[in-house]
Length: 476
Image (cartoon, rainbow, N blue to C red; front, side, top):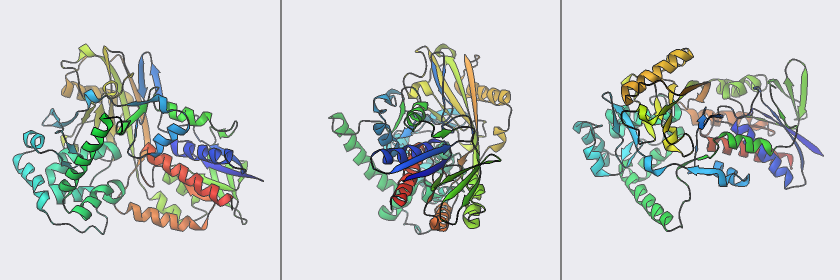
């Protein structure tokens, strides 16, 4: 007997789900036909890589984190390990825009707090009252760790306003494109909540963790530790992961320009998926790997409560503007991964990455490739600017901060509308309600960035877990 599973959505989560189903079917006696429906003309969602002459330009995500193992393990299974590339350690510094200048993030400063004393004392990033307020965290009592609170409230409570406004907001904003006063601590940075719960002082807990990382680094030097840097990419860009997964799917399983318009659960537990205005595809199971609001639309006639919860998850829109320059165009050549911009600086970019310094093979030796990030939940109006206006705004900011006024060799702009799910306070409880409501549909699963993490590795995990759930159900 052949079971048909329809995966709706061809981003990285949908691809991971379809691949995992095919993988499971090939190693067992189960006959599973996978159909992946993608509304757009290409796979990969926001992941796309363009080769421009000798430059390699990323439209969306440029890497994934190795601390979360799912993407790394997937690369191993599909034979991409030899293509993995670590960050270039010579350029690991990150800068923060402060008082109109780039100030280096103190060595050992990890997202919210310092793990090394002397660089923290020396930095011009914080005032002396701000430094004393942050240091006082060592002596603060443990707060209420039972409920959810915003990241902004947590940082203010533990470290003060300067820590939030000058470092935590721009660094976390670069990950979630979100307002920290709305962002759920438990859903986005649970490790810090756990640090307070177990160690009382977050700084003390981070010092302890730093000692463990130092031991790991020493092990790596002797050949017994981690092989990869915290973030890795692929030599030919992240598109390699998309192409690697697509090539391993059965012939004919992918349908592009194929939007699912209606979902129906039949009385026997099977599913009917309407495609366009006429075609109906029958299936034994369905995996929804779409944005939450799209999943909500499809689920509205099936479970109103779950659909309403999904449609209530808000999204932010972002754009990336990649620019290529000659090294000689910079008064002082950059020597870091890039910089982030606090919202209080009121500039027209959120952050800027020096792509060719972060990873090798992104630009010729005498050139620098960088990309700026625009929009997000704190500056949604900037996303609405025309392409020309957006590019010019980015160039103006680079002229102000880096002194580069020459015309770029080329520019590439990509827009990602409604691409960043916002994990607001209460997000975990909301997802729990959704999963409980959909529990009565055992052959339906959700996957994607809106549920349990926004990164590529998180998306791979949700896709593969959805596939495992469906396979186990169909195997009964």
